Length: 166
Image (cartoon, rainbow, N blue to C red):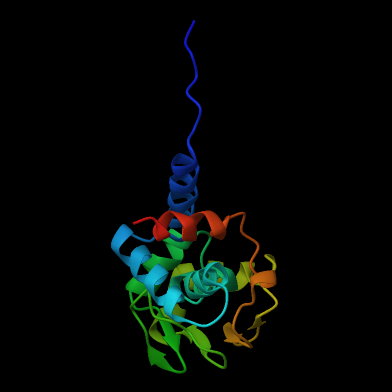
């Protein structure tokens, strides 16, 4: 009979960090930078971390329903199909701000994928901090995401504790 090892506190913190990285598709170095940035911001570090991750352009594109997954949304962004305030944006980690309008490039509106997206738009719920214009196929960032708007099961306290070890 095999004995199961008890997971240490460090192990549970590591699992939580890895879960967050996997959900948002962020590499270790980028994630560490987000933690450092969240530490420098005022307010609860864990909440600020989630806010920074939610404000990534690839995540916003996913949340608006322009992609079926964050990975697909990242690819749509990287291939240059998305605009922010009318300007082409091809960097998935671009931090969106309140008032930004996320849309499609004119050339991209001719693609088969755009037709699929425009037909399925509005079927998936959009977070309270964003609005979607189904006619224009654009999304607007109404406000910055608050911790209550983010529907993830990530325990940010564990992540902050993991990175506070020295």
